[in-house]
Amino acid sequence: MERTRPSVKEAAALSVEALKAGDRAEFARLVDTYSPQIYRLALKMLNDPQDAEDVLQETFIKALRSLPVFEGRSSLATWLYRIAVNEALMTLRRRRGEIVSIDEERESEEGEQEPLQIVDWCCLPENELMGAEVRRFLDEAIAKLSPALRAVFLLRDVEGLPVRETAEALQISEAAVKTRLLRARLQLREVLSAYFKERMERVKLEKE
Amino acid sequence: MCQQEVEHDQALCRELLATLSEYVDGELKPELCAELERHLRGCQRCRIVVDTLKKTVALYHEAAGEAPLPDDVRSRLFVKLNLEDFRKES
Image (cartoon, rainbow over all chains, first blue to last red):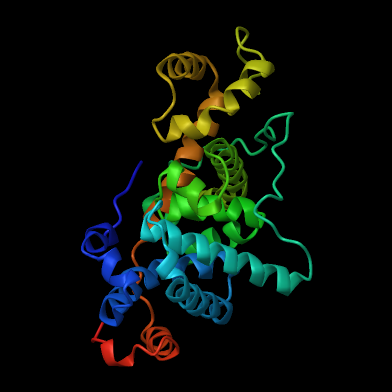
């Protein structure tokens, strides 16, 4: 299920040397290449357009400041995602007045929560599975995840980063990425199953 | 998880739950994959969990799309970064 990101091709053309040397035109190209995905990530992390815009701006301000010391150990995309996720977590912390950390998700030893919703909704017609209302619900379901699970899920399944890059962006181990991804996906499956179960019942009623 | 199948027990269903994410990504080790698929053939509950998990991930992949940055957001970003001279039409 690995997907290719269109920006990868453009990114290949960006010169890290020019960026590090302070080339403004090259920085503008960096901004245009990555701002849509950084904004999307921030929007889905925070569920608020104003906060997402603040995170977007702060990400590139910090990137501009840190470029001279960018070591190129990770890709530019991964590096930008890392800055953006940290900014988003700081925003959540300010908003809630509590500690929100990427390390908050303790890896539980007793394993995963057993699936409760056992309904096969895969057979629903395509128009029931993908409309504006469903898309809104998909976003609402993401917002219900803890920030630590949300960050992993967004980078891996929405942005399409490989496990290794997700781990680099979040500065956690690959094993932690895998555990959290499983947990996030299982939680979303529960929420979506409950939602589509209702839709299945409605479709059935309409047919009768 | 599997009440109707005699040869499988809840412990196995729970154990295999840990492998589902990698299975959905096609990254599960061959021997574990074979074990899971053997189990799925006899366990309807796990089959439903796997199918709906796959579909959940697929729906998010489909919905991801590449939305462009809203024009006003882009304009303010370029102003903030003092990059207005380099702002080409999007």
